[in-house]
Image (cartoon, rainbow, N blue to C red; front, top):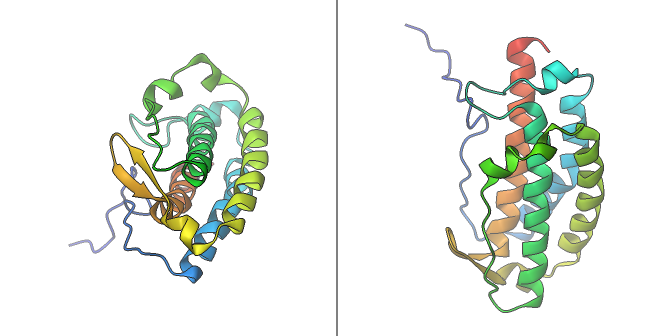
Length: 178
């Protein structure tokens, strides 16, 4: 009987689990993870050909190209949601159909477009996050699918999100020898 771990192609680092509330050390670690996404993502896609970028990371999954564009879309939404929660009282945020967005024609653009956007976005987002006080992380937003969520949970979610999708790409590269 094999004792090899079962590979979960959908959740290579596991599903997001928040055990909050976060400590200051947790928050610093999450902010560091968010700040590192651009470099980690660039390293993950470095040297991939267009054919490789158009390879799904798992059967039925998005292509690497779609993942890169998705990270830009998702993290732009997250950044705006942070700013809304910091400037409004429990703002209602709009969800979006990320699968439909991943299939829009722009998802075929060169990844350099989204990599540049992610670089700039994460630079700004990291400044906002680093400037936040502990009480700011208690601010909340209303998400129609998730309910009331505080920014403490949201920072942990997006630290996980970047690692999650980078792991999709690095896992594909390891499995396929790309």
